Amino acid sequence: MKIYPIEAGNFKLDGGAMFGVVPKTIWNKTNPADENNLIDIATRCMLIEDGKRLILIDNGMGNKQSGKFFGYYSLWGTHSVDASLAKYGFHRDDITDVFMTHLHFDHCGGSVIWNKDKTGYEVAFKNAKFWSNKDHWNWATNPNPREKASFLKENILPMQESGQLNFIEKGTEAWSKSEDMNFDIFFADGHTDKMMIPKILYQEKTLCFMADLLPTAGHLPLPYVMGYDTRPLLTLPEKEKFLREAAQNNYYLWLEHDAHNEIITVEETEKGVRLKEIFTYNQVFGA
Ligand SMILES: [Zn+2]
Image (tube, rainbow, N blue to C red; front, side, top):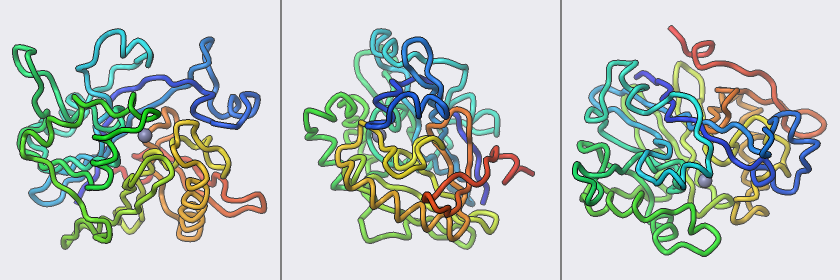
């Protein structure tokens, strides 16, 4: 089994919204804002090659929204899913499974593209199974007014229409096991309903794809919860449990949204769980 980082593109988000109740004087130290109060955000997805399977975890925003829409998110950098896949000799048609932590636009927008004559949509990975879970799918396709702007129909429905949509059952914690792969899932309900956090055993280390449970290294202190979370009081115990376990077992935490820190480890301190070390992917898992 091999794992590769797939950078799907960078953007910016309002720093205040990203840090909820935390004042700017504090979060600005770890996540410095630009003149518009925006902070750097990545969409660092993960590719797992396991025998004949090629599994992509999340896929960024995609490119089918309007210029006006993307204007709100100040896209920057030159990354794309296609370019990142090509770097390792892969093409999007090689992907056998697309695992989506949740269906917010910056995690699943790359699943769907315009069709050739731009009259409708089609899935971007024509040979893949798309994986969500039933509760989250229902939550996303009947969105509450607060999350509605994050669940875009055009990102979601074409996966079902293609017949390629599959659901993971909660309770199937070991989603995928092979001789080489051990892929567990932690379900979290604080950010959105039934977000799925992958925990993968790789090179004798536990690598956790943190998605929106821990968007950046700056979010480690417990109350540093995004304003976007639908149930912040539930994020607190979920995050505490996960980070404690991560500190005790020296998990490697893959930060999807941190533009400047790829992977971190954490440790228990008297103040709670805090940053231990920062690594690039290559430093931990490079050849
Ligand atoms: Zn999200």
